[in-house]
Length: 218
Image 1 (cartoon, rainbow, N blue to C red):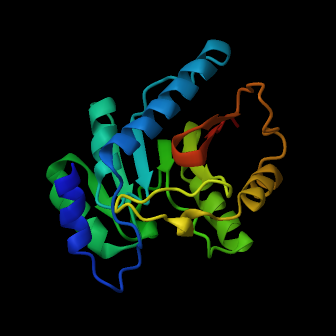
Image 2 (cartoon, helix red, strand yellow; image 1 turned 90 degrees about the vertical axis):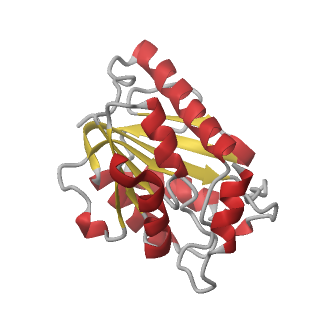
């Protein structure tokens, strides 16, 4: 709700490590809808894509709105959140209470991996190419065999809108570098062409973003 967004933004410390602390609920629903549609299309030609996750990670979970949406859509899944900012982790813990685990230490994440990893609003403008590669490697390592990664990449031609109504240009990591790095790390599975393949697909989403959806099949 707008009230929940305002409550969070009013209490954000000025020196917080996470510059954007929440996502408008309807926007989160749209991203999840787009992911669900992509997975269902893949299922038509690649059986196994639409299997519901048993274990799900919201990477960069902020105050937990994405986790709430995940709990609604996958009521039997174990939902876990991670964010580098202890402030938003505390808010997520307060919001979700006993329904999910939330961590601020990467090393505390369960070692057995996840069936679905959601990675939205992570690619900041001031990231270096090496930072992006390190992040992508971390995300891929979090997948179980058969697990799915969803990563949001913004177009540099479109200015994404923040919940506060300001233009969040800080999200606009160089998209060309992102796609080139993905090709280099996953050369045998990704062509980024309109044709669907059984290991990856891309789908347009909110505010000029593209969702890269990858299934670990090795």
